[in-house]
Image (tube, rainbow, N blue to C red; front, top):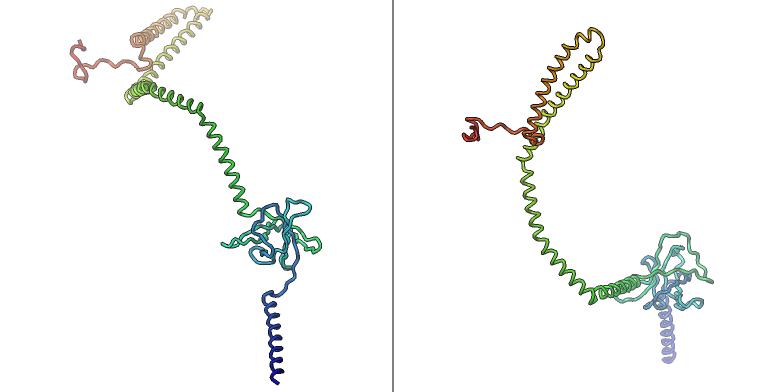
Length: 308
């Protein structure tokens, strides 16, 4: 009886252990979902990416990497086969990117939408559609750093060529010439400063007022001259009329007209002589005006010696 009870207990234990194993496999494996295969094509280094790595769509886990191999038609390409859930809306604008998770550095495939094409990417298990991989952040930083180092190297080579022994000698001579030229310019600058001071003195308010006063006095002088010229023209016209009148009345009136013309000529000549005398005595009056008369007794600036 005891042997049968031990056998029954052993059989029951084996049965329970098998059920527990099945439950554990089901729990760990999770529910199975329909998936489709896609092939990610890249020419970049995919170090850190291993089979069974995660595949994420905009940050959500949607599949895993099932295979990594070289392209038999073009060995420069790397083919990464990924299994993606059936409900993921992939399009012809979808691209892949190698991303790294946290501080562990585990690589995974990140699927992104570029928006260039909204046409759905239909799955085909016999010939899986291909998805292009774009450079990752580390790849972009590496390429930028390499280009920067190359430019820095070229800059250093150019700097060394520019600062050669001959160029340094020329630069030293040029600096010495500039220093000598600066020393020679100092007297010139001092003379220019003195000239500017004199120009400022000439252009002070008093000189400007004198020039304005002279300009205001030139106006009447020119007006008198124009009037004199006009009177002479009138007299000439009268003489032409008198000479051109051939009638008896014109001949009889010739003498009075000549007397009148002679009087006008005499008056005009005296006025013109006065104007010419003023211009002859003080020609600067055309610019600075007629000179002021000397002060008389009791006026400011009167001198007994000058008044005599």
